[in-house]
Length: 197
Image (cartoon, rainbow, N blue to C red):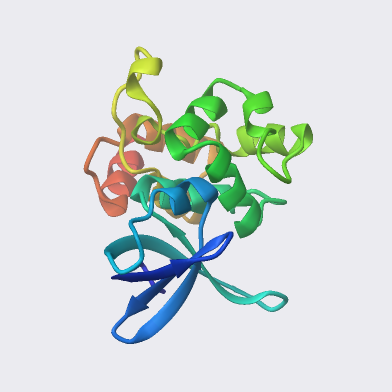
């Protein structure tokens, strides 16, 4: 896995950036708003990346200037019908904080403005991600009463661990939400949730 690229921006195309790292040029697919925020060619840049391997499309790198956008991208591609290119298009229309807010407020109309996303797919994204989007990915002041929670990837891992131990997914998710606290690792969340159950 290539977690990030740090190097010199060689140039851009309509939908990608080319970054030179130690004499090797990496082409990274990026959203339009990310491409607009890149520095001038010749300047250094750090891009958070996701390596996608597909038997039909081959090997592709998808990149983001903000780590939060990469985290949201990884959640989006877990939804059936949302491939990497569609996910990049969604984040190009709605940055992660705005997308998170649209998900938790059931705003399918905002999500369906993204290219390749109809109202049916937008509703599916909301349904599948509503319980996975936490305040670290949204605008805190727009959701009064919410408190900071643990990392969503760690929480999801803890849920999977409890399911593997024989608990229902519903009970596992409930226990993880009750037990998880900021800065907990997946293992700590799992142990706390197990004790709660």
